[in-house]
Length: 211
Image (tube, rainbow, N blue to C red):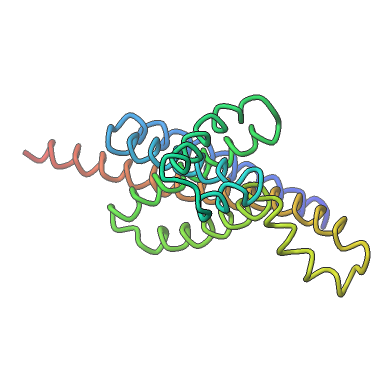
């Protein structure tokens, strides 16, 4: 009897999550049809892709920009990042960067919509959760060498000589956690956006009938 109740609760949670995900996808599709939200998505996508690709191989590009290179050489360094963005489509690591950037761009787009429609509490919650996911994603995926260099000293006291192996394992766990947090944020904000748009349509229809 107890297991049946637990199973029913789990089933209800799963079905609710699936329904909300469907509503979220629907609201995202509707927003992408609006030019200003499509523009915010595309700009955010490029920005995140550029940043993650910039640090993909570590902090080398940043060090070059801070060096005594000529202005033209520094522009060339910045330009090469655009090629790296295209290179992301050629390997699994790059595909993860693309997916992470898409989720982050969707989060920004949905945050803009919820904030503009005075759903500030949801926007703040989404910004905090999505922000944590973005930080984890950058540490573990955007700049893996940076992430390991940050984690390794903290783990040396605990894992000793196995600190580097532990740091790599935690880095992979952070990637998974980042995706979970961003997907959760997109679904949550997407569902709120769907409810908001549905309520607006209902009010507009009701107002039109009252005329």
